Image (cartoon, rainbow, N blue to C red):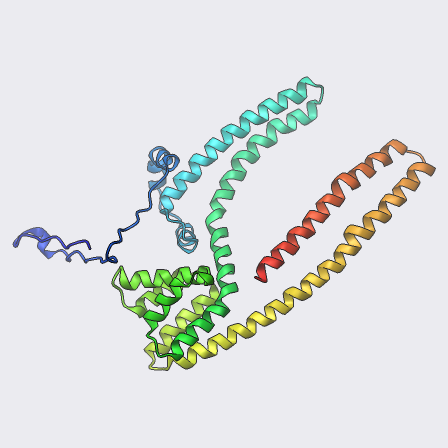
Length: 324
């Protein structure tokens, strides 16, 4: 427990609001979020530049939704530092490879590497890091949507036993089987038990920072139902049935998509390259330009077929992950 400091009467600090006591569980200590050595160097180097302009509110929102424990200005300083380091490394690699190809007589490829590697190493790194919080927030939203149906069943079962709303979310936060939904519930419990806000305010804050539209609508519905004098137990049961129905429909759509991809795989990746190889081989034997046709065959066998197979594997893996 952090004790509230006492102030001497008659001082200027007496008019200030008192420091609120923050309580933690017995035997536990607050876990600070510390910066790494590279992050500290980035902040010392680019902190003044970052603080010179206002922080992007979208970046700040995405950092909260992604549960990345770093301030927006600190993250921007890290982005600048990583971009410069990556740009220097890409420039050195581009110069080395470019000179190597130029010395071996491949001047065009060497000049291309001299230009492309530094540009992509710098610009690509910057935009990749800028979009990382948003990508992580969207990924968390997808994970929440995958687990929200089973989590609603747990909430409705707890509500049927006449358990209070704050205790429901506290127990939900302990059930790690529900993944990111449990993480969102744990943050709501943190607001009520550690920060001292009431449960309705904690639910409103949770609705603002969650990356899932479904979970946001659910939390806003809980607040609206409670403040309007409605019954929460029927609301939980209705939402559990709704999410279960939506989950079944989504699973059916993914299964149909996987079936369509399997048929497309047989046609595009198996049959089409086979016929193409046979036709080009016949052209190479009967017609002219045999060396060029052989290069085309190498391109199909070594490039087109592996890339198309790995592409279909990636899509099938992504759909399989969505079905978990």
